[in-house]
Amino acid sequence: MTGRWRDLALAGAGLVVLLLVPLFGAPPAIRDFIMFGMAYGLLAMSLNLLIGYSGLVSFGHAMFFASGAYAFGLAMQSGKFSIPAAFALAIVFTAVLALIVGAICVRLNEIYFAFLTLAFQMLFYNIILGWVSFTGGDQGLMGGIPRPKFLGIDLADRTQLYVFCSVAFIVCIAILRQLVTSPFGYTLRLIRDNQERAAFLGVNVPLVKLTCFVISACVAAVGGILLTLFVSGAYPNFGFWTTSGEAIFMILLGGSNVFLGPLVGTVILRLLNDITVTYTSHTELVLGIVILVLVLGLRKGPLDLIAERLENRRQAAAQAVRDAADAGATESRATETGKGGS
Image (cartoon, rainbow, N blue to C red; front, side, top):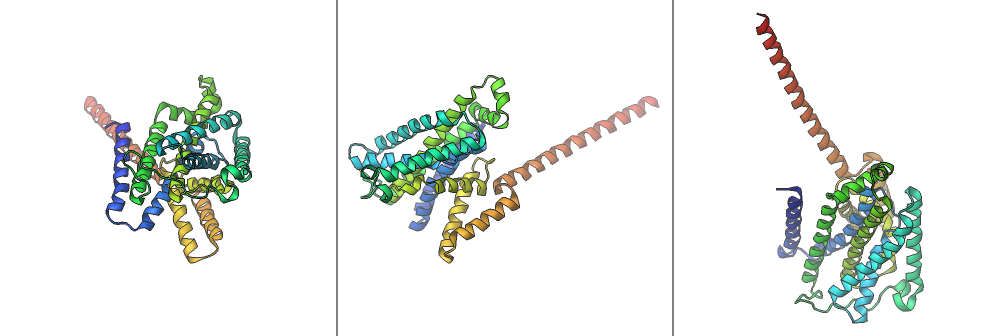
């Protein structure tokens, strides 16, 4: 089985596992946790397409998370769109927004890129707060998000909503996986490791970065749409800088060099948040200490550390096989030499 078909098979298996959760009678709290994790997991995974694969650290990625949420919510509240049409409209709107922002930002590197994306995010956030008649200001989109039936699917039913979110989530993860294992994905790694060499080899670096920027924004928008459906609203904090910070924490907690690392980091951060909220009022302090210990102690995400140790063991085993083969060859030559001398 080729790598592409193996990945698609694993995506199908992951979808089956998610769909089995309600069938086994999991309590609503578990399903809600999973749906919440899927929304923020897409935010973290999309951001890692920039950070882990392209070397572009964005402090403003939550802007696209919020743009998807607000575009979808406003389209549904207008009463003029079906859910699939509003879904597509939100992604197109986010793609255009990312194209405009990215065209300005991707020509900058490192800290300049990071802070310019943060500046655009704060501009977008202030537009949400200031345009009260359209966005609801700091109250967000009030009154709920209509969920009319389409193709026999009723998202007002929590089980059907869970299934819909699971399918959308797995499709996005599968697309990201195919992307990072494609020639385009390896081009991103080349740009991350040595941008000058990539340009020397004929790669249109700004265009590749911009394409990656737009794709990652669209995946983040899907996460925002799922969250909007889950909470039946869209709120300014979706696009605040702390949401981008949470996504970066998720990547740090899980690992940026393993494909599913950010998703694992999302689960870890959400569990830590839920546990600390339950047992203490000092949530930020506890989370800060845990993140500090992990970052300073491991100096990389847990999955990165596991993957590195597995790779070291694989290389050590391969080296042992080569050494044994070399020793056998040397012994064989010595034996033949001895026979020839006699």
